[in-house]
Image (cartoon, rainbow, N blue to C red):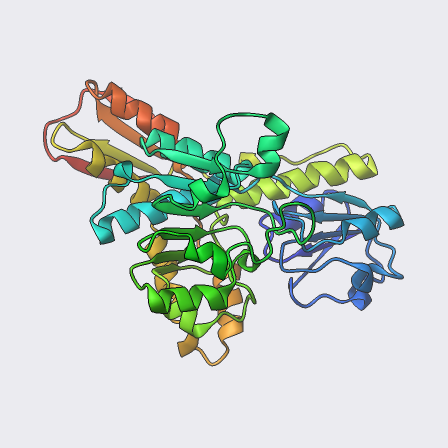
Amino acid sequence: MHILVDENIPYGVEVFTTLGTVQTFHGRHLSAADLATTDALIVRSITPVNEKLLAGTPVSFVGTATIGTDHVDLAYLQQRGIGFASAPGCNATSAAEYVISALTVLAQQQDIDITKKTVGIIGCGNVGSRVKAKLHALQVPCLIYDPPLQEYENSHEFVDLATVQQADILTLHVPLTNTGRYPTNNMVDRTFLKQLRDDVILLNTSRGQVIDEIALSYRLLAKPQTKIVLDVWRNEPHIQPLLLQQVTLATPHIAGYSLDGKVRGTEMIYQAICDHFQFTPKWQVRDHLPMTTVTLRFSNQFTAQHALTTAILTSYDVRQDDAKLRLIYQNPQPAVYFDNLRKHYPIRREFHSVMIQLPQSQHELAQQFTALGFQTTLESLPTAPDFSMITH
């Protein structure tokens, strides 16, 4: 069996060579001619998979190591009888931790207490539900807007659009859809933006097409007190220079790019391809992940907020990715630079790779850390220094 695997899928070669011969490819540079002898195709979100790509090829299985599937023509795959699998939830924890990092940075920059703010979560699926859980761990009140989920669950937990639009902070976690009762393409348009608070904080880690970027740019010119965090852009890798300058935090579609999340995606597609071709799985990717990387030790000389902020930004500080993207237009090939930021993304672990050591009296804070996803222990610790970090 011959398998084509996106070059940015971690452990892709090691994993899929247990099933056959493997060839890697650049996700934006794939054509039908490349698939002349391919039985299985494994992609990420930047590769459109449709009739134009697959017609006349022997491909009988397509896997995407991503949550979203809007880049795949599912109806065509079904029509052709081509097997398909995605990786829902694989990087949801990573994307949720990105939101927590961004809000922690904004709280520092704007000198605000987010526990005194209300966060509106638009879309409460794999990512949104994790954002909600982590915000609850931080004691931040949330409003949930998700009409399809509300209809399915028939719950009183949800609010309507007008209510969620009045939140101090809005974070978007919706799939990209063009049809149905609740299409999300251009959902955040001029009319939507007019309903928001003048000083709203808006984060988008879903898809760039969810926001009308022209309307957003005009909004920022008229109301510069608005704070925007964008990880996704309408025309990636060709992003708008003006909007990049206007937003508070900007990153190159890497919210879900933790090593843990990418490896989960690889493993989920590996299991699916084994099921499809009736192979016995021989590889468990998780066994090859690094063990705990950092221990943070706090004595009694600290505040809870200091401990939480330190732990979150030690695990992942979104400002590092923001600083790199800001250099894009100093590069003669901005689009290539954008893609290379993703291709050569440094290893980033999730909160669970960090061990938090707290004094025995800090039971409530330990529970907060555990709810956020960190490993936590209560120990007899010295009174000074107030904080130390041990790297393993």
